[in-house]
Image (cartoon, rainbow, N blue to C red; front, side, top):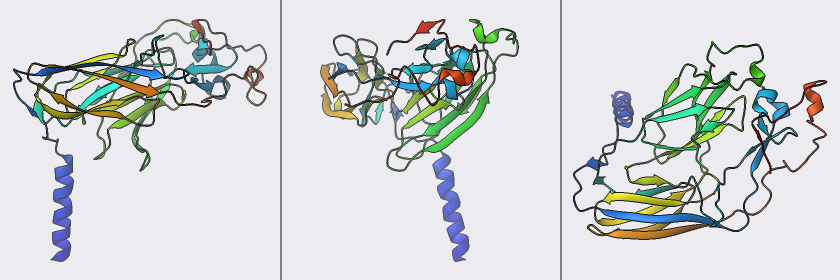
Length: 305
């Protein structure tokens, strides 16, 4: 009898965990307030990450955007001259009810060996659609991430190219055609809200996903500014997340009926060297490994560290 009861409890727990969360209630908001602000960063601009093209597949095709010396640069800190920070996600925590929670469908394109957009926001159990526009294969790996308990694999699937791409000379082709979409439903464990999608063939191709509990969020553009509207009056916590930083920035906010609240967030740039792409010559994994006469010529964009 005891084993039967334990099995029943376990089954109910699994069933409840599979049900969607109803912690947020959609209601009509007639006297909502607005939160505006800006996210900036101070200090020296962090060095971008760099990945060696010689050690991965499709070095020539993916090298159309490169330094020309065998490196692909990923600049995850897009900073304007005034310090404005792009791709920071601003979230309002603690909102139990408010405006409609229908978020735009997430579509990520693999284009010129890069994922776009770099940052996406979605609800838990929403679908992510990934489409390969390149004339080469990609391999899509999704990971739920958390610093305290480590990562967990969400999915790992090939992303085929369009079969009508011409194989002859495709490594020098600038033609892009959509392949068969890959659709995956994102479900994170309790207490986690971040996942990263990366190509298993080309590790410099990655895109971040942030799972939110309510529709009150914004992603900063090049000017670092954000606006969150139709917020029900109340006391909340305003949080900021950026892929290159180790911690959230957060502040308590009080939203009044039909009022406007302004808040500025300032990150301090992480110090130290973040990559080795400054090396013009890599004696261990140099261009000579590709074979005689093979070069990595950045025909689309020459990246300058």
